[in-house]
Image (cartoon, rainbow, N blue to C red; front, side):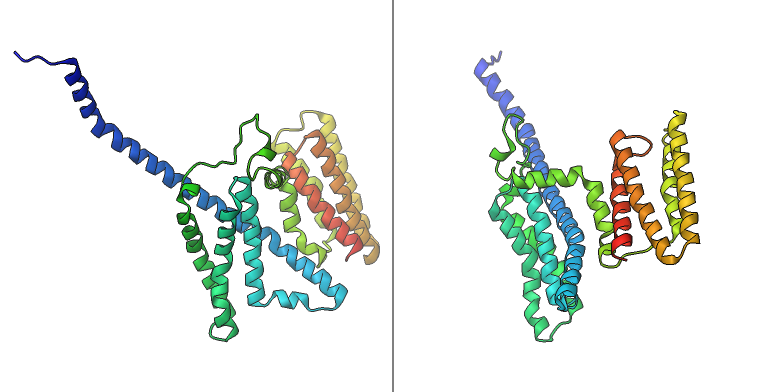
Length: 315
């Protein structure tokens, strides 16, 4: 008859469980690390693209305005492939920097990611200046090498990019005491909270340098849009709200008719006034949060204001 001691039983149990639990834990940890790494990479890539899209038109507007004021051919300078490449790298670096600081990354990894934006372009600038490659090759090669350069910078700091984000501070800790949680965090919060405004400014930025005078009848889109959206959202159960929207449509019908009957110069001012007045209408609906979504009223208000102001004062 064979007896089993308690110690032997424990050893047998531990030895039986170890081969199954340890590999599972290691595999799960690796999957989590890979997921964090890819999420870091995706977020920084998106921030890079957003910086490029948002800041690119800003430099064009500033170059045109300064060129007009000083007589310098600044827009032509921006059209140079070498200048455009470096400016684009700067725009992407700024977008990525704001996001990385928001996520509590230190300045060293931020600088490395900035280098990953610039180095691919800097590598091909001498061949471009010597005439060995053209501007299209410079831009294409720089963008192709940029993502591998980002990955190399991330691999250099695996502990930095395979862990969770450190940007989420405990509620009791003020944001200013968290590394990277000060100005960058506030900037990101403003961008997130006012995204309809930034989107509206981005889609209308060309109006400041090339004002678009729309036909008078286009203004009818404004009240009709509110009626359609309000109907879909079932906002007209209160007859007073529906009556107010119909009154707005009647007012714009009269304004369009007046703009079409008067001389073109006066008609342009009426059209500009109609767009600017509708931005006030948007603001009122944004405050009361009725008829249309608040995001739409905010976006529409900025678009209407930009179109109205540029028609009245710049066209």
